[in-house]
Image (cartoon, rainbow, N blue to C red):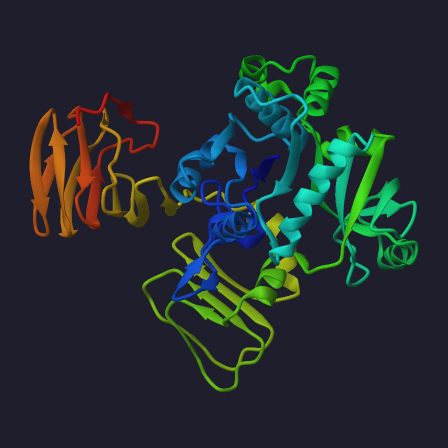
Length: 436
């Protein structure tokens, strides 16, 4: 059994904590022991508890590949989309990727989004689905979630019976509440986007609908592939399809409203409530304190990229507003740590850089800007045009335009980086081969 986790979205509904680089699955918001973990970390932990030796591949966008690698084990494979399309192209590309790894064409593949909020017994269903794919004649096995209310947000799977495993009669897209109640009365199940099939089936569908199952061809022509979901392209046209009923807890925590429902605490970060606050949550990623007084049914989220103050119900409708915001990203996680923009104007950019112990930046140079680094905490080494220098708190490093440079963190390392120039741009970067 191969498990494929889909991790391609940007999570516009979780503004301002999510952006094109740090999607919702990377936000550390769930309490786990003495720390907080992200949706991604929670799902990986649950899968590993069920299947310690699970073979996992993550399908993600190229922009998220480095941050993803920071959080997953080295044996986890990554299939990176050159640009964002939809779930069918992403799954076809991943199937072709698995083919290059000599995975058997008869191998059961479990496809699952990376961000469901579930208990561990949810992932135990994967083994049942894989077994059905091996033993039954079905081409697709879906996992249908027993609804807890007449939701208008989810698609519905209509089974032929209310048995634990049933043939699928039809699919219904997001309905109104009255239609949803009728579907549930018929035994309808929420479609959580989880399914199983053989690798050969995915490759066959790729050949039929994309004219190739060759990894290099798909990769090189990815931007030209149709922007279509797997459900529309494949599932809704498949006649030989069954569904496994899941009766446990399942939540799509894609909005602030649903996310706060599963948070174990009402605040994250420097937050102070007075005694008159009710059913409110505050998530604060800044170093400034947030004080909340007399608020009810409110969510507040503060980061370097903005501040959200919203009624919980209304927060579900943030996506159209968030899509109108076209500000440069001021906070991002990288494979080596994080950066936060502190100040910017037409001729300078000031950034706080934090590298984790053992991490390093790529060896690079800039053609149109000078940089000044001030080490404020920790110890490390910088390489400037091939010369290695030890650095620690208080050291100042000047890097003129054209100079090759990098930094290696021997301990956790904090740097205030000032960029100076007339045309400061993320595109102004030339990569060089690392020296050490």
